Length: 290
Image (cartoon, rainbow, N blue to C red; front, side, top):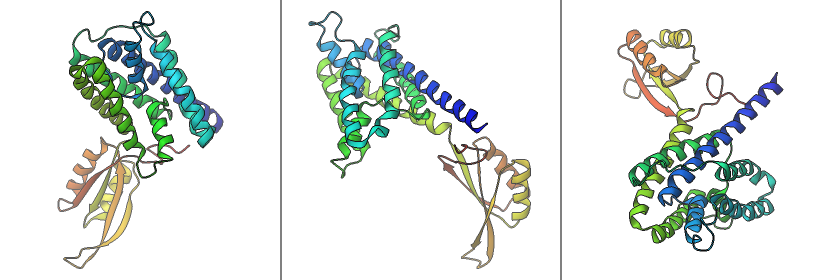
């Protein structure tokens, strides 16, 4: 049974990576490239090279060719420096993205409206990247380049190096397509980040509650019976009163936190409840451990 569940889980991850890269290709082909909008990354470089090679090759160098051509040496370098385990997750995503870029039909979804292009492209690519990351994959590109560079510039984080690389790509795009389109590209970059982060965190997002109450037994019973959640009692002392108390700690999902607060108020109107975000919760009832 474990083997079957493991296979199903792995199949779901592959499907998420394939679907995510399909959406990424849709945003790159049918929004950003069609509008001349460079948003960073290897896809941005591919758009620049395609525009610059229009006079040499009819239609310019295809996006998938540049994307694959840039990633192949990067994968080989990463494999040599850090081993195959470093590149194997990105390999599937990169092959899938390049394939989608090559076979997917191209539509100009936003027409000549740059604001719509920034909105459509940002949301579509953000959802695509979020699905790829949720599937445990990546698409190589600037994140892998940043990881390789960071090995030699350890005083900088991978995120900082990625920001510098992507900023450089956007600046080149500004030179090629003009500052007007570059300013809209900044909107798209912001949306990509917010949407992908929201998708990743939204599926794993929970709430942690600390409850200081004079009726810990009654509230704990309510949490376990009504919400079907575990609860932990933590010994605490009120520094003003000097009294020993039992503080309750529990984690619930976003919908359950409303019921929790209402039930606590019913049992003990004087209870002190602290609610905070729990970005990831691994365990029964939340993200199951593999």
